[in-house]
Image 1 (tube, rainbow, N blue to C red):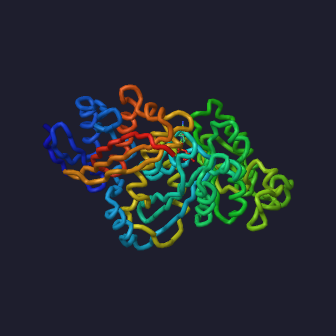
Image 2 (image 1 turned 120 degrees about the horizontal axis):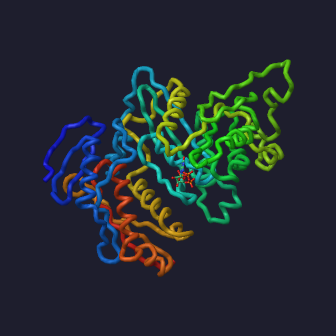
Image 3 (image 1 turned 120 degrees about the vertical axis):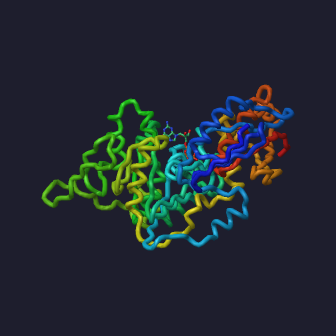
Length: 435
Ligand SMILES: Nc1nc2c(ncn2[C@@H]2O[C@H](COP(=O)(O)OP(=O)(O)OP(=O)(O)O)[C@@H](O)[C@H]2O)c(=O)[nH]1
């Protein structure tokens, strides 16, 4: 049926396999999308094998793939070998280490994926999707940006109450410590989040005040009253950007009209002197210096965007590129992430569980990969068992007639295809295991 083999530029190759015809085809992205749509019509039925198994059987369009995007190897040895390649840097390379921090669900992973042009980090509507720090590598021209995606910041009380791993408390801090720039993401559609900066974020900024910081107001697409953004910016910056009083214009990149410090003007128009607890080691996080604050007056720039909008993120990306400094690249330009293929796979499946399962259930699922092999024609075959702690959860995850588990397998399989740029067969089983 489909036997055409089309040549394409290296980076935009997508290997897809028509299961019905059993024919491997190598396609340009555009061709892939067209044929994928066709395939979805022809063969896009989901199925559940047995009552406990969901299998993806669906070719779909690629949402994140950019023409230049390199692939992520699904074989651990291949991925390790790519990671060990010496960086293929040009003559005058530039680098930037960027930590992305914020409260849970602010959209950190969504933004990281958009900046990378690839989905390598899990995203879901539930909190705590990201559980530990992970690196994404963006290489363009002479510049390499290392993105440090982090778990949502939580204080010790919340971490204890929700029995969160230690990484929730340590990883954002460790990432900021090694970063050249820290990007603070705030979900402005959340009325609590826009009242003041998260206390833990403030604490971290205060302890690392030498690191250049940028404020990103995210999810502006959900804001009906755009004027609210001005008030929010005022609060989260305490009316000061780069330590200067600013006139803020919505809808613009941070070309905030700054009034430069003027010794002849009133004290309030000039940069504030640092408060107690705002710099370095003086701060223990419980000082009044932070308790009284609603924002951070030392942001270098403020961006208002929607992380799901590629165009707006592109503006931010261009700005970040300008912040890169001369220095050696850490990775070969083929590297997209330092996560192992198994980690990517686990995260993607977990993302779907978080998205589709109610309340606390997804947090109690244990994932065990039973099978991970390269099949014929370069296809990746994965079998994973989802162990649940309560018998009735088995039924819940499978859904009526296996509908839910099929959906999870289908969507996770699609994301894995986009991550690894190859055909993926994903089988999911659900089992009850006493804890
Ligand atoms: N409408 C809208 N939704 C967004 C935007 N950015 C992120 N989201 C959604 O917000 C939810 C959380 O996004 P994530 O990227 O997982 O957030 P996170 O900050 O990484 O979350 P944690 O892992 O819990 O720290 C997802 O449902 C995203 O689709 C945006 O700009 N607009």
